[in-house]
Every structure is written in C-alpha cells, then in structure tokens.
Amino acid sequence: MKKPARFSDERGSLSVVIIGLFVITVASLMVMSDVATVMVAKRSLAQATEAAAMRAVHTLDRDSYYTGKGTILTTPMSLINKREHSRIPIDCQQAVLDVFLELGNWSQDDTSMKRHELQGIVLTDFSCDGTSVDISTYAEVKYPFTIPFTSLKSANLTAYAGSTNQVQEGFYLFGVRLH
Image (cartoon, rainbow, N blue to C red):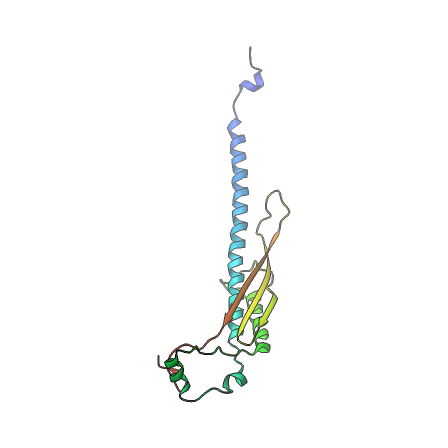
C-alpha cells in the first residue's frame, strides 16, 4: 500500500505543535498574571482594613478615660495584685469617621503599597463596643487580562480586622512609661 502524496510530506508538522504550545503558554501566563493580581490585591485590602481598624481604635473617649482615672497608687497596686489593666475606651462615633477616612485614603492614593486594581474599598460592617473595633470591607479587583474561554473580568474580595487598645504593663510617672 502506498501513502497518498499529501500525507507523505512531513514539512510544517512541527510548526503546528509550536503554535499550540505557544497558545498554551500565553494562556497560562494570562491566568497566572490574573491570580497574582488577585493575591496582591487581597493583601492590599487586608492591609487597608487593618490600618482602618488601628486608626479607629486610637480614637480616645476622653470623658470615659479621665473619669475615675485613679490615684498615684493605682499602678503600683495593680502590679502587686497582678490585675489586668483596663482597656482604653474608644469614641465610637469618631472611630467610624476615621475608618471612612482611612479607607478613602487607601482607595484614592496611588503609592506603591496601595493597589490601583482595587476599584474602591467599601465598609460592609462596623462594630464598636466602646473598647474594641471590628470591621469588614469589600472591594472589586479587575483582572489585567480576561481569563481565556471565560467572561470573568473581576473578582470580589473581602477582609476582616479587629483591634483593641490596652494599657501596656509597666510603671508610669507623669505619663511616661519607665518600665
């Protein structure tokens, strides 16, 4: 049996394999780029959420803090009795404003730590009990490339952070921690 003439010539058969491998490589690079973008944006959203929680927890409720502060013997007695220091009271109304300000800074600033792929950070949950703050955020991240064979153009990310501000152990003299 003799092969037909058109199948006996093998010239160009390698080019089909090379083109196929090139397409697979480009598609893989696009997917890896999208995954890396989402991972970096997720970390950036977590940093923004943590920064907002830390900023919120530092809003001191001065009236509660300075009422019943104690005497000069309060700190030495708490050290002798090994009693926990009380948590520092938070002004919850100012805290929520500070959270919005911090998240706005992260959404609009273009420094290297803040990702431009995040379309806008939204506060989804805010909880303040007077001594601690818990917040949840949401953001949408745009893919640099559309994933091949899909219509996905973005991913939804969420982050959660909580914080409490507490007095450090040690001896304080006129507001300065000696140890």
